[in-house]
Image 1 (cartoon, rainbow, N blue to C red):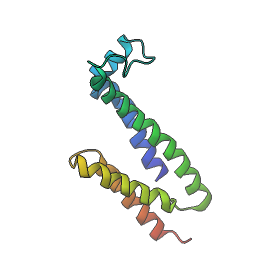
Image 2: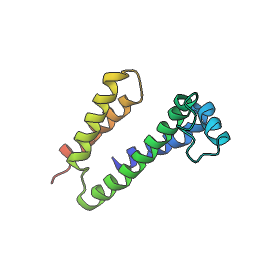
Image 3: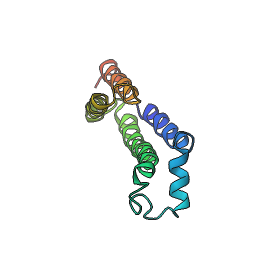
Length: 119
């Protein structure tokens, strides 16, 4: 599960400049520092790319933590499984056709791994 989250995370970060090119360009043109909310006329544009990349970084952090628990115990942590399920449900409630479906699959993978691996 740690590796799966890691792949999702790195994909998020690497795709940010491609999927949110206008957002990234606007942030860079503004100098980066304090650039998201400094100009209300472009804060929505800049926020989209920023939050997409930040989600990837947060998932990467989670991937490392989950991976360490998996390595130590042989199983993904229960809290990560339920957390991913909740996050997927939350996201799909507001945007059903989105990448949140991937988190639903990852939660399912965690449930399967927990079920198949003795404690």
